Amino acid sequence: MKNDFLYGVGTSASQIEGAYMADGKGLSMADLLPVNKNERFKCVKDGSFALANYDANKKYYPAHNAIDFFHTYKEDIELLAGLGINSFRLSIMWSRIFPTGEENEPNQEGLDFYVKVIDECLKNHLEPIVTISHFDTPVELIKKYGGWFNRKLIEAYLRLCKALFRTFQGKVHYWITFNEINMILQLPFVGGGLCFKTSENREQKMYQAAHYQLVASSAATKLAHQIDSKNKIGCMLAAGEVYPYSCNPQDVFAALQKNREQYFFSDIQVRGYYPSYANELFKQKNIKLDILPQDEEILKNTVDFVSLSYYSSRCTTTDPQVQKNVTDGNAFESVKNPYLDTSEWGWQIDPLGFRITLNNLYDRYQIPMMVVENGLGAVDTLTSDRKIHDSYRINYLKNHLNALQEARKDGVDLLGYMAWSGIDAISASTGEMRKRYGFIYVDYNDRGQGSGKRFKKDSYYWFKTWLAEER
Ligand code: BG6
Image 1 (cartoon, rainbow, N blue to C red):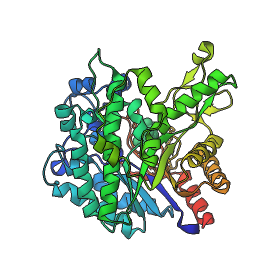
Image 2 (image 1 turned 45 degrees about the horizontal axis):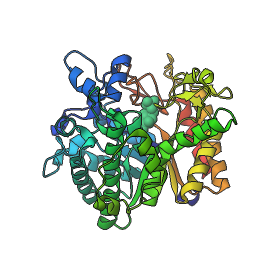
Image 3 (image 1 turned 90 degrees about the horizontal axis):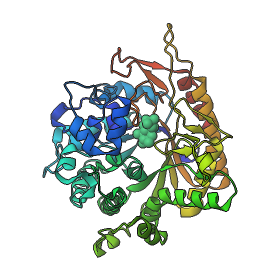
Image 4 (image 1 turned 90 degrees about the vertical axis):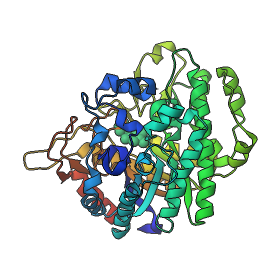
């Protein structure tokens, strides 16, 4: 492919692997999330609720079986490679390697699984792009320490990193330290395993946990470079430009502040220190953080590239009337933008917003970037002759790939583009199977019932042709 640009697909362990107790694996945060919409919604915001209501005998937990990639990885990787892609983004389930998060030695059987998966990628000429932590903090670390609110988690995370960097030295060169690190502010249990008491300052807790993750990410960057100078480490944002609803300066300033909520994380990971606006932000929110002088030293280990997910743009206003008209978008509530259509789940569809987001991020940081998630969650119908006519997905991807090309022409230095999710996976936000993103259909429903067979969608053939023409 031109200039070795990475075209691939992205997945995460808890959304595809299943086998949630195999080979000594411990429970992960994701194992505790039920499919029931209302209950799941409460869990993702607060781990106290998730821990108190977990009952595997009575309820269905989609991550327990997912699409059974644990057993089908060979066929699945081969099918995906058939698209003509040259890279595959996957994540490591932390509790497969360290079941409680605190063992001195990694669980060899857990590691072996990923050795097989990575070897399979390499056999199929797929560059592995590995997310170290993708929404799967081990439950034991949550019970014992309250998740990322405790500094102890840094040490536990680095133990995982060390095991991975050593095991995959020479095989994996691209690492992402935390999936969508800014998501901790939207979904604190998902992003950081956080649990709350009713009266506490939630933001104090979230920003403290974020600080420990930022320190852990920088320490991991240092370690990765020490173990193999060829390692490239990326931070990752759940990105999507926030537009002002109107040109009223009040709206423009509100949008600036909303955008800073996401940039706060990458500002630190790319520049190596807290941004100047953080002081005022913390003062307003009455936040006091435990930041040690040695933390500030560690933060100086900055990332090699910025990665991002992009599904939609967002919009904000200070007008109380307009504020009433909201819609969803990857856990970020947004004011409805009258110029945009939405997906079946209310996420606004905005390819130009993709180009805008890429340009703004690149203007801000001027280091290479990688798109590691982009796609459309939609209901697909499997016809009686086993076809899936997903023209809506083709349209979405065609327009976004076009915007990507335009952004490259604008001068944005991009390393690659991964479509989410290549193969159907359970939805991270809803736990549903029917919210499908893949080029490959997997025959399971929201209760995990079905043959599990894989079928190529129309988008599979379309993407394959698109990629071939791109060469
Ligand atoms: C991102 C996550 O937030 O969005 C993925 O990194 C997730 O894990 C993707 O699957 C799409 O969101 P959802 O909720 O539709 O699965």
